[in-house]
Image (tube, rainbow, N blue to C red; front, top):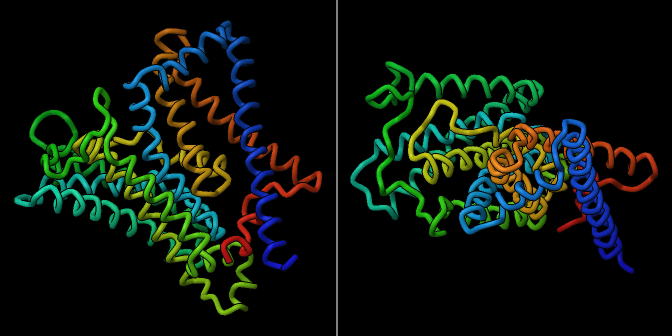
Length: 365
């Protein structure tokens, strides 16, 4: 057996372990959530039944689930790319805000273009805003060694305040009227809806394309090889001729662009204008999506679908079963807790739990 085949076999085994650990985390989280429901006097069967119906019980429900899944895919990919380089991008929520701001501005201010030009341009401008926002943290990390967790969190609040100021009274993007929002974007900048009877738009197709792009980038390109090498061991990567600072800045730019694209798609496909806080926390959920997805684009896709279903189904769960929508936050937190617990247990017992080490250079090399 050659060295390469042994490496690929090891990666495959590690991936299987990661998949089992992720599935176990979800099962344990749902069981723990059921226990919480019982303790509070609720019926887990009724609550989870309503949750399922709300997420997949009708065409509209499926559309709403995929609608919530779309920004989570982009956000999960943003966190994944950064993690593969050994970076923790806590700023996806702020990058979503900046992407939405840029897309909204392009959507209503730029006029006279056909849809085939206006829509891609608005998406590109929103993506560029996210790229710029992620690049700030990348530069501070690469040049000044400022920890990206601190800088990205601080940049979140700056982004929130910029977006809030832009649509507040006297702000440059404030529409006429009482609502703190921008003008509605032009029809030529709106993402078309693709599922009759629901709000599902073409952004989900763009998200699927980017899952494939990021998968190829990470595992079948020289850039992805370098990103993963830096994440595994910066010292070894530098010894091998990889420029650490350059790839840190480039990785944060790519991560920020995915966050910005999430915001652009949300504005151009759902809200059609910029609100002060149009994201219900997709950037924070993206962290759990990436971790549950094993820091792999295909895993992110499935994980985003799960979290999208939880968000979509929570409304009917509250209406039918009388269980607060906040229960979804509890389940999401339990998923993260059990992800950490199962991986810690696997590592303690000598089983490769995946994560950054399983992102090994051997895959796709």
